[in-house]
Image (tube, rainbow, N blue to C red; front, side, top):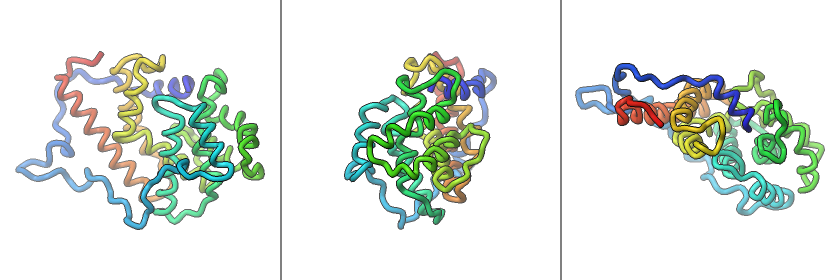
Length: 259
């Protein structure tokens, strides 16, 4: 994961100490007492999309030991178990809205293990965490009883899950995982994740570095969404949430700088 953040930090945008920018209309409204424009609002989730539930709560067969493995071995402030649960849940919501058929076994396994190559026990210097994940998952899949004839499909989904990956996802499961993972790097959840690693990751030693990374994510993560309208609109609304936070924080610190 250190290599993963090194790639992201290469695109950081420094925080400006210049003149105060005009207030974001999503925060201040459009003037004359008018509310923020409609595009600032989160798009409504279709009512028929099933309410999110913890997919590990009642997991059966091979999924039960898979959940136990990830919960025990892949804990982190910003990625790992909880991030994987969100990715799988959001990917299924995207699939439902986009009416995109997919293999649920492949999507679940890929969601749970996509970041394993960035954990100390599995990472390899100079190797992107997605590539490394595909190199180490076979024994884990076999141990939990996963249908191994689907293991290649899991690897294909994992390889292109990162928003910064230059290659477009090519399968339904790869598209869903990529878009869900990108969305988890946007909005309020992204603010929570990035600030949680300040001082815990060498690449994010300060709040200022965290702000720079959030600025970079705001610009990059929404650009490549592959599953269609629902995920694209959700990416826009989450990016606006992030923009509101960044602008308001700059405003409230009077642009004096951040530690």
